[in-house]
Amino acid sequence: MTEFEPKIIAFCCNYCAFAAADLAGAMRLQYPHNVRIVKLPCTGKVDALLLMKAFEDGADAVFVAGCLEGQCHYLEGNLRARKRVTYVKRLLEEVGIEGDRVEIFNLSSAMGGRFAEIVEEMTKKAKDLGPTYISKKFHTEAK
Ligand code: FES
Figure (tube, rainbow, N blue to C red):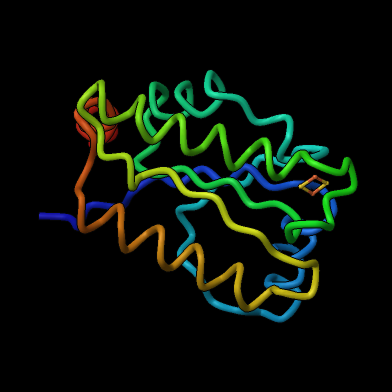
């Protein structure tokens, strides 16, 4: 039997988190390959619909990664994103999906190592939780 490989979606802001992901690559850091990065101008662009749609489309875990608090290039985008992630945790629980499957992180562009750690953490969490009842369908179809 093949090991469950979770699908992780990362919504990263262009300025810090995406640059940190890029740095992780440039530093040749090893991290799980099952993360798909969606680059956004700012995490303030993230809304509940976008996060829920990622789960509807088969994600096993989703994370939002933006600038450090106080350093968002659009002032409060990352603070708004944090509130939305908290809201989506509740929404997920209401539809029978563990709220821990969605998280938010703050990074600077120099934190390539931390980005790799986050991917490891989210992958481990998704593996421990197993597929969602939605993603099970996608994992079954892929076989
Ligand atoms: Fe990075 Fe807003 S510009 S979180």
